[in-house]
Length: 311
Ligand SMILES: [Ca+2]
Image (cartoon, rainbow, N blue to C red):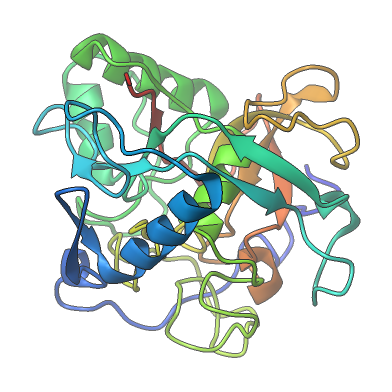
């Protein structure tokens, strides 16, 4: 049981509000950067990031930041995340801040990588099971269709899934590092949520419109709310997302190169990020962090995969 977020109402409560008719259409306003189609908000972020770094355009054969692709029809849709630097953690005056979110420190993501546009869905997980890559079909607590996020995933199961994807495609799939996750979730923003400092309404799926706990567990189809500026859906809300990092109670001594922090700390506990359908608004903040035990199973834990890119 987690002392910071036990199986209390904070981890098992809340219900969102609505699903839109075509989730994958939301937030997809085509623009053009480096010859590829990107979302309009992403175009602005990439231009700013590139100018700040003095970045050069990647080779013609490389995948460009903002580009989306899928290695196989049954594989998750991936989005190319640009290399850049960002300030990881939350400032002392951020509402709802936890001490584990500091100190704020500069992190440089030296190489682009790819991250799932959505959380892994029930259908994607079922394919892994059908092909013998995943042996488990975690118990469902409520009705879901194939495009709902897979939940109730234990540590060993999420690792099995990325191993299966890697073997199937020849690419290196893995869990994101905590730094990669926060960089991608912030998507160039510095506010508590990627849409601003106010939780607002109709921005994510987690809880009541005032950020308080709702009634009963449930999920919505992935992509039911607008994407962040990188074109990623449900980074905040939906399910908690496993990262590779061992749990450390603060960022003192944390790496600054974007890699997973697996030295020291408590590796029986791994960092999860992004909040879930039953959490409070403060848990949806981009800087919020907590953990799940590698030997346990929490109903709200899901996953989003990362993939290495060859440049
Ligand atoms: Ca999520």
